[in-house]
Length: 170
Image 1 (cartoon, rainbow, N blue to C red):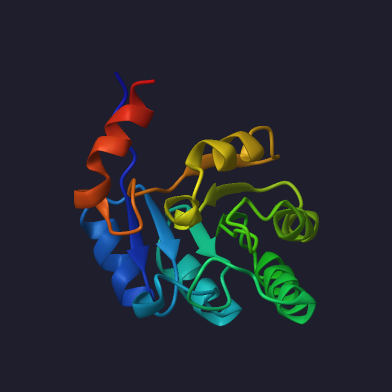
Image 2: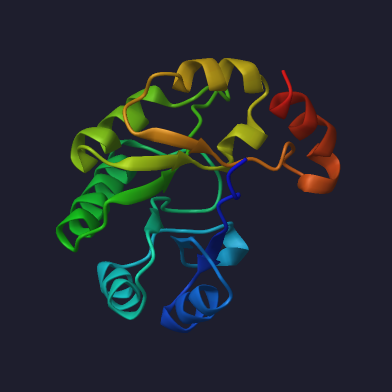
C-alpha cells in the first residue's frame, strides 16, 4: 500500500516553507481562506515556486461560492488562468456548479481550453451539489482531472464522514 499524499494549503512563501518542513508532498496555493480559497496572483505563485521544490496546485476561483457568475467573470478567470500558466503554473484546483447545482461543464471546458494539458483537482463544489453522483459522473473523463476534493458535506468532514466512507468503499 502506498503512502497517502499530504497536500497542505499555503497562502504565501512562509506557509509554503513551513508545509515543506512539515513533510508536505504538494501545496494548494490560495488566497482568502475565509472565502474557502481564491485565486492567488502570478507573483505569489512565482515567489512560492521559487521558495520550495514541491508541486503546487493553484486555486482558480474568483469569489466565495461555487457558481462562476456571468460571462465577464469567466473571461476574467480565464485571463487569470492564462497569466498563471505563463508564470509556470501547471497544476490547478477548479470547481464550479451551474445555477441548478450540476457540474458547470461549459465553465470547466473554457478554463481547460486555456490551461491546456494540466493535472487538476475538482474543488469542494461537490459538497454543495444536490446530486453528488451526477456531478461525479459528469466529471468522468475530463482531461487532467485526477483528484476530487470533498469533505462529504458542505458542513465539513464531521457532517460528511459517513458519505466519505460510502464513496471510498462503493
